Length: 258
Image 1 (spheres, rainbow, N blue to C red):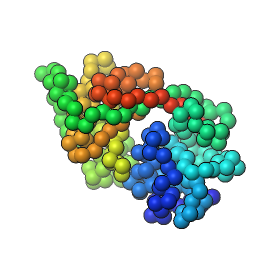
Image 2: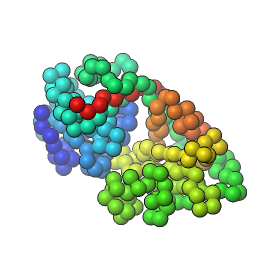
Image 3: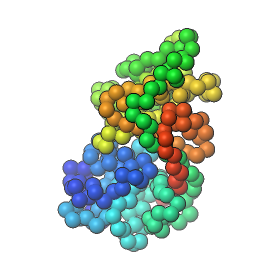
């Protein structure tokens, strides 16, 4: 088992990973060095038979190639000594046999794909109440959002955030009621995130601000996918409102650090 940096990733190793795996964009961002703090393991960078990637934001682990049980156990033990881990896989995936037993959480996650690029979202954006306004997130606004300060820290400061992150906020006066943001992607497929202040739930604000973000992403030539837990019915409703045409369900397993 060898731990390598993104600079050591070869095309052979890159090609071991499945673009159809849930949240696969996160994996490829780590391999390309686009996501800070990720971990990459393999048996041989030049001629790999397997690879394992962990992204550091949520701790999600991705498995590529053919890994034996002993190696998988060694890798998962190593990762769990450093923190919590998450694995997302289809129900019928043979890689499930490689995972540690008795996850601390075993639930369901939904992913939404294939929103027709350029499909009009004006029918959503035209519904913004007059008392509200949509604003692009800037260096001032990001520090007033719920997620923004953590994102700024993640990118090493405001300059790093500004170079890598894109977002919009929905405001009532000088108060932010909902926010949506997205990071970069080496695959051209981006994963938006949205959060609405609890006092303003069930008003459609998450859909409004997400529609503006998706519109901007597509104008830049990228596409999007949507990822949320199955019990997060509000987030799933936003995805359906945005027009994604394909929906798939996966297992969502978490293990706590050892």
